[in-house]
Length: 181
Image (cartoon, rainbow, N blue to C red):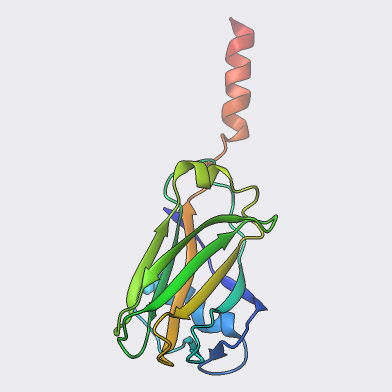
């Protein structure tokens, strides 16, 4: 099984707009949709100013439990550029609880919504100091300065389930057996 950390608050929104309401994080948190595999029509978007200015938004992520495993960590983003223009780039950056970047990666545009996955290697996953205050930064840049709109429909962090602890009864029984021998 996996754990999911969904956007739970806007930290810095820049020029990004919500498709409805004012909470950008709520447009891309889609916990229900990830579980069911269906998409909804909420999103956040930003239009380039035709000067190739990077447009960033930062959202905090809900807490997950340290999985005690350095495999299976990734950030998933469903997005598109709205116009199918070449030169659109989305940089995805996962920030640790201390504010340092765990990993960032650039993805190229597509005119139809596509899922981009940023996979962490074991060193990057082991470098996460806390799973209770991760943040996600999405930065859209229009290298062609065409004034294209970038839209993000879903973004989340995933990692393995936390290791289960040994029940106290099993520990007590093991201690009892050791004392008898």
